[in-house]
Length: 411
Image (cartoon, rainbow, N blue to C red; front, side, top):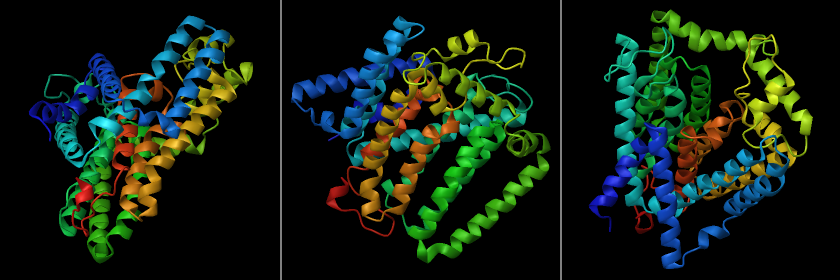
């Protein structure tokens, strides 16, 4: 039985993680400490036996005992290695406690849907009027901030938007209404990514649609005409939007084609090549966690090129450069175990929409081009591991489909 404070906490959790880095950090620590205390009080440590979490412990041990001692900044790398463990603990807390029942998941989704739609409305307002509801001005003519004060609204909302689409499965609506609502929410997200001016966010969101839409086609065989009509209508609206917004189209769409056509000489291609060069300096153990900028600058990789050494915009190149091949292999093994646990039940039960959404929630964060800082550094990391915790939580029992009545197991 949920209490009112629990209702409130679950509804507020998305906002606590979205709007402030400091608030997100405090929230993560409080959740982890409460989860550990609960596990101790109930002597419930079963989550420690999960393969993905054991691999997370092994990865942390490697970072602390082998990677950090040979780091360019041993103390800093050790602290980041130890603090990395809060992310898997947070995901375990969500999966095994906070979001472990359907009622909890529904209340969390209510908060997430309301928060996401308010943020989307604020971003749209800023796109039209140049300033959002809180007086925050757009970052530039073709980049927005929304309520976040930084030009990352697409990056942030990408991590939670596909989680919100799980409402299709959590609530037992009719097939017609479920499909209509799902297409509407998905298309709102697509327009949102377009107007933010963030190319990578738009690319990853669109790629997620290429996974979700075929799953909907399979899940709603009796509504394929409705789905086809919806896709045609969305395509027409998208083309009209691109025609009437040439500056945004040039930034968000056309520039993608330009960069892909000459990728090796583009800024992305040169940054990737620079990251590979940094990795070669210590191929097996890496330069140390959170030392890529220092290693890159010491080597003078981008001297005279007008590029910075902030991060290589590629999660796995950054992991390779900082943790070496050994660290990269351990991380990929942990990630593979997460994917397996999240997908094995829905795939076995042929719940294609569930499997597609879980796959997309993970992949928009762990795809190579999604950037390295989002996995280890807050506040984006809080949203990444929120997604991990969510897909593990909903994988624990079958989700009700619009064509199937809710059973006792769904509660």
